[in-house]
Image (cartoon, rainbow, N blue to C red; front, side):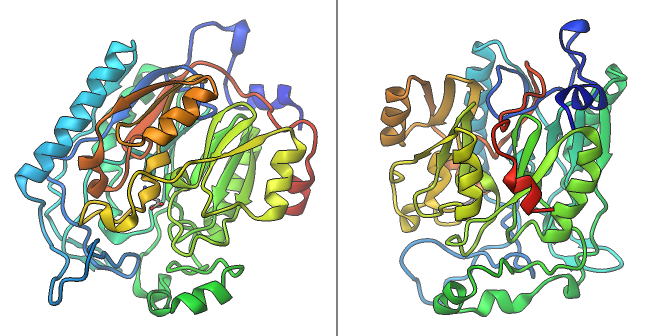
Length: 398
Ligand code: DAV
């Protein structure tokens, strides 16, 4: 398919129609114009469920159990302070910032197919919703406590959809999240077993119903890369392919065999600008997939060690220390990083980036860092093709 076809199919008008589409983002790095930043109000601890077994970080304390219910107000207030500071920084850069609504996350859910004692929070829009060209796409989600997490964003989504008739809005089919959708034995495997099965890409979600979280997708122009993970399965990627390829995108599955608990691409494979991806030295991409990037002239830049170990992450944080690389690009040469990650700052400055730093560690236990806590609604720019030299991966994964 030619680039011209994708331009027409996706509604992007380019120079022929200078009025920018209200919703427009094709990659992770183009100049940011409008963004949604999450909020911590009313957040709950992750309840245990077939798709999530929350763990306490740090030295083992006999008898300690993971807390349940609403998080303490002081914890939420500290996270909100850092989220509000991010809003102020973005506004000072001329970016329009919007905020989600708050749900009563402490309410239990009972659907025809599952029950869960509480919901989660609206800190991480990245997991729930993604801009693909002029389209807002709501993910299926993979965990019961996050089933209704699209609701805090619906007022904003309706507003964008109402204000600009070129905006398209799609919600992926909701999975049952019934017991038989999951593979609970996943949680019992020893590390040796995980090592032995690393090329199977079978995690806690089965392969019957399409399942994906939006944060398992990363955008590089007309090419989208989607990770097989605990939160995205093969039918989920097939659904994305069938939905998006008629709109001019190419959808590629990507795999990181050494990540035994993969969930969301943005601590693993983070595009910084055309031709450059920040990669995770513990989680290399599968060789055949690496070749696709290298053959197209892309470079991988391994992130330096994170500033702390997994055990030193906040006690109730379920993400790894690699939140260090979960940065937000404001332009192709300006990034916002967490304040403590000084080795990363130095490396990126050495590569010509302007690095803005903000404190964000108090947000970590709410599901992520700067990329997770944001949803870029509009960036300038259009659907470029950054993979013009070699297309062997496209042939291989169809
Ligand atoms: O490496 O723990 C966390 C991503 C959070 N949304 C990790 C991935």
